Image (cartoon, rainbow, N blue to C red):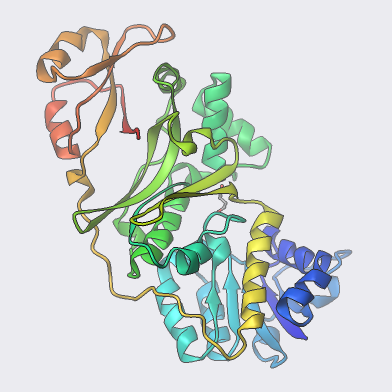
Amino acid sequence: MVNVGIIGYGTVGSGVFEVLNTNSKSIAVKAGEEIKVKRICDLRDFPGDAAEKLITHDFNDILNDDEITIVVETMGGTKPAYDFVKASIEAGKSVCTSNKELVAKFGAGLIKLAEKHNVNFLFEASVGGGIPIIRPLNYALTAEEILEIKGILNGTTNFILTKMNDEGLDYETVLKEAQDMGYAEKNPTADVEGFDTCRKIAILTSLAYGKQVDFEDIRTEGITKITKEDMEYAKALNASIKLIGESKKENGTVYARVAPALIDREQPLYSVHDVFNAIFVKGNMVDDVMFYGRGAGKLPTASAVVADVIDAAKHKNKHIPIIWEEDKLELGDIREYKQKFFVRVPADMKEAVKQKMPELEEVKTEKVKGEFAFITPVLTENEFEEAVKDLKIINRIIVNFK
Ligand code: HSE
């Protein structure tokens, strides 16, 4: 019998309890023995809940219980999660977490600590919820040089953008609807400003290149400036606007960023709608692979945590190596990265723009009046800013076509 302690009995933590109970028989077969939740630490009480009797308010009840060999951390945030996770590993317990803030900031150090104590620190649920992506990067794609990772990594923003596109609504209206439906948080900043996506692409890029990518170094732009007019232009281009977290290796340099981008119909990411997530990976041998599924939600995320718990149970006294060194990976300057830009300016600037950029491609839609919209040639951001410095830009969006 393997005993588990859960810290944080919120959406994901209670999902872990549910998955372990619902699938207990098949999990026991796969793990080689029964896995049971022994204690749950949370500040709250849960009267009437199936886990009511397991609740403790004192983390020491988990830490000091030698029968608990696996700790599930589903609190979120880094304080006090980091201290609890560190103490658990130092006490010889494996830790499985869904906490992307913790993993993005302290992942490399916690892996090293787990190695030192011959236990495991596993974090499949920290990116893409129920979508397997951490394990594929660690196991299935290890023969590859990863050339590119490109993902829709946030369900809330994908839901908002999908609804804006399908129903012709503006950002504020859809955000309010998403909040009323419980998809978006009351304070939606982490999702809509791209910070959540940023941590996730930092984790994926760290794993792809085996070094620490600091999320603070990744240029991050959210979806708050996307309008229904942008959506009309996207439709005219046979494209959709998605919040993309991406990293790319070019001439030995890794570039990473988070930004809304126009994605054309040729790419599978075009068809990823609503709260779904998808991660596209390009390797130098395997070429393109893509992972798709529910990137958030109680049971999908909990399922990924429990898969880690089973892995930890199967690897008692055996550290599963994960290549993610604490040395920092210096990212290339994203301002020097080349791409096309979609740009909207007032109609009376048409001639001035055409003179500056004779090779531009005009974008037309009947739905928007009084503007001139176009796609630039391939430019770095520095070149783009120089080219448009005297123009009044209504909006500009990165063009991420195949
Ligand atoms: N807020 C996140 C999302 C939850 O919307 O995708 C999963 O990390």
